[in-house]
Amino acid sequence: MTSPTAFTDEETALVADAHFFRKKAAITAKVRGQLEATHQALKAELVGVPLVIPPGFDPHAYQLVKGEHLEDFPYQYLDFPKHFDRANTFTVRTLFWWGHHVVCALLLRGDEIRRFKRHFVDRFHRLAGNGLELSLAPTLWEWNRGEGYTLPITHDRKARLAAVLAERSFLKIIRCVPLTDPRIQAGQLPQLGCETLRAILPLLTP
Image 1 (tube, rainbow, N blue to C red):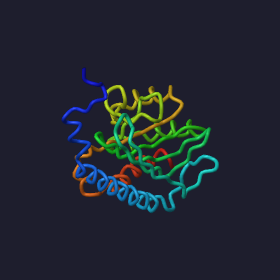
Image 2: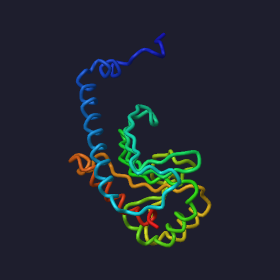
Image 3: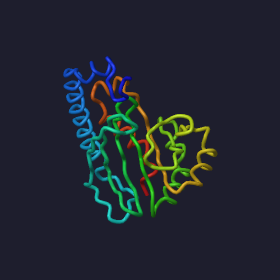
């Protein structure tokens, strides 16, 4: 009887493939480089821009994170701007999710959420049409997109999206880009991050 922990021929070939793991390490380093460049680009983009920020917000705070188990897939991300405390979240996350997509996400929760929701409605047509989507998930930490997960922010969906948002205690807006997009291959993640930041700024300015 075969042990349930025995390797198949395909699995044996994979774990013995040193070339694959060297390639993975090289790609991981390139992704980190793109995220570091994105941090610098976003920082430059925000110079002189007034924002509605929570108490204790540090405009210089950021983090770069790498892991292996986001639904069993590796991931790397940048948080900048970055603010998390027990009451407030004010963060832009740029997530490279292996096997899935790149996600540029705005995460908002806490003291100013009513103002952000009001901005969403009042400035809706400045947000719409930019490839943004409203997360429908019950948590800020869901990264899938599509039916049941997100709704595209398009000009014809204002009433529906406003009704969905009215019932929520937080606001998460995402933009997803396939990993096969030529801009990702060309190392243009900083440009994509800045484009997304400009698209969401109507929510964040006074």
